[in-house]
Length: 328
Image (tube, rainbow, N blue to C red; front, side):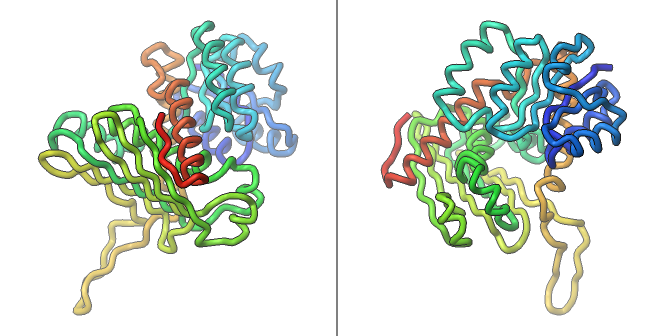
C-alpha cells in the first residue's frame, strides 16, 4: 500500500481523498492546506495527519503527491514534489502562464519526473470507449469532431475573477479531449466568445459562451461549443464523424426510467453536477495513479499534454480577443 500526501482540502481535494481511501493500493497519509480547519476535517475523516508541504515531501514513506490546491500553486507544488522523488498527480491546468509552464518542462525531464495530469474526461468509460472505437477504425478515417460542454449554471463570480478565463478554466478540458481524439496536433485555432448569460462575468473580464474551431495539418476539424449555463443540466456530448459513419457519446441521465403515455415518452433529467457525472472517471484516475507508482503504467496524460492544452487555450483566448485565426 502506497502512502499519499494530498495538497488541497477543498472541493476537488475531498473527491481525490475519498478515491484514495477507497483504493486498496493507496492510503491517504498526509493532508496539506493553508486553511487549518479544512485540513483537519479531511485528515480526521480519513485517518490522515495534517502536515506542512515540507514535512510531506521530506517523508520517505510518501510515494505519491496529489496536487489539488489553487491553480496558481499547481506548478510550484508539482515541481517540488517531483524533485523530492515523488510521483505526482496534478489537477489541471498546470499553470495559467504558457511560457512559465513550458520552461519548467526542462526541469521535469531532467529529473525523470513521474507526473500524471488530471484531465479526468479521458477516464470516463463512455469517452474512453468512443476513443477506442475511433482508433480502431470502426467508422473509417476521422474527418470532423463535435464536442459540446455546457455547464448547468455559472460558477460564483468570485471564482470567475481568479479562474484564468473560460478557455483556460473550462474549455481546456475539451482541448485535451480534442487532441486525444483527433490523433493529430492542432495547427490552427479560431474562437469567438460572448457574454450572454451574466453581465457580471463580462465585468470580470471574462466570457460565458464560446465557440472554438480547431484544424489539424491534414485538415481534420473540431468544433467545441462551450457555455457556462445550459438551462437543462450538465451537457457533455461528443460526436465523431468518419469516412464510414459516426460515433456518438450521449449525456448521462439521473436514471434510465422513462414514462410512456398517450402524449409520448419522457425520460429523467440530465445529471446536474460534474462531480456526479465524472464520479467513475475520478475513481479510475486514482487507480491509474496507483499503477504509475507501481511502475505498471506510464502516466496516460503527462506534462507535455498539459502544456499543449494550455497552448490551445491561450491561442483561443487570443483569437477571441482579436477576431483573427491563430496559427500554431
